[in-house]
Amino acid sequence: MKNSIFLGTGNAGKLKEILFYLERFHIFKGFKTLTPSNFDHLGEPLENGVTFEENAKLKSNFFFKATNILSLSDDSGLMVDKLNGYPGIKTARVVKDLGGEQKVINYIFSKFKNDYSLEATFHCAIALIGDGKNLICSGKVKGSIIPAPRGNKGFGYDPYFIPENSSVTFAEMAIEEKLLLSHRFDAFKVLANQML
Image 1 (cartoon, rainbow, N blue to C red):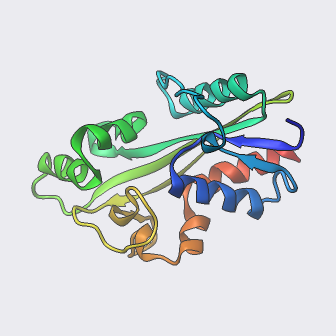
Image 2 (cartoon, one colour):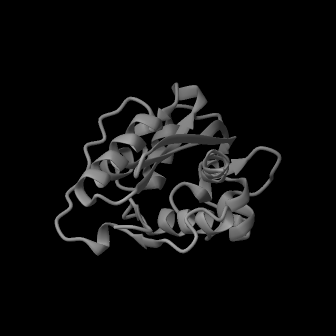
């Protein structure tokens, strides 16, 4: 479908952020945006890569083959330094398995009982596949996680993550402030430069 782009996510919070960045960086201006909710029975991509970049590419390839529409997908997650990058590429699966972000945070801090914050990194990879494009871009933001949530903005681990040089969590920030500091911002900035 000409002048259309498929955004390969069913996560409402992530979709809002992707739309913000497409507008912010003037990428695909005038394009119709489509998501899995616009289609019946697309199925789910198998995310069996060993890096965020591989999983983002697997998703975009899957959706491009299923729709024949230029596809953009994101794979992102939280990496805790003291746990060798856990939960990393399994971030979403661990949340499902343990029953929510707070339970994951409880599990992490149970291993470090005397720590009240742990160094961590949010990582994001985006892949754009189709119409002669095969781009993979990455971004990250360093900071720390805390054991109890603070703030009610954002989604996922935002209430637990404090970026470097800040005293507040992503969920305590004004939405646009968080969006301009995030790992996803970095990845879309790289994409915008590659699209020039």
